[in-house]
Length: 169
Image (cartoon, rainbow, N blue to C red; front, top):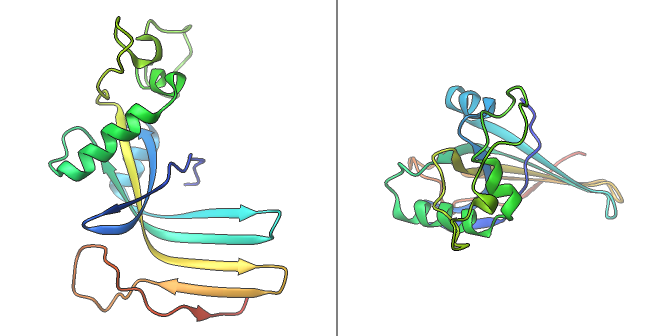
């Protein structure tokens, strides 16, 4: 499925040096779909420079139940960096459900003293671990393919990228 997401930056984790951060609601349809099929593609188009990046990879969802302290810290930091309205959405009823009026949620995802509450169970950090990047520049028909070395026997995402290969646009 195609989804619109907000890119929240890159993170370098011990097991994945090029993780791309996004967020999602644990109750959303995409979480069920990711559980069945964790491969995805992200496309970025830059109209001013006529450049396109198509990034293929695997998605990883990080909940409060994760045991990796590095991932939990990234999840908590991202939660704290969200705008107040964005945090409030995670306290609403089930996404996509019938609207029954604005729910009674903690304003801004904050307590009575204005301190940001801990992330609720519905808040997930979503990481895209790239395995290939296709670059296209339409101004001169330059196209490149960068791929992770799949001959590596490691199950983790690593820094073993093959040299970029020029391909036809």
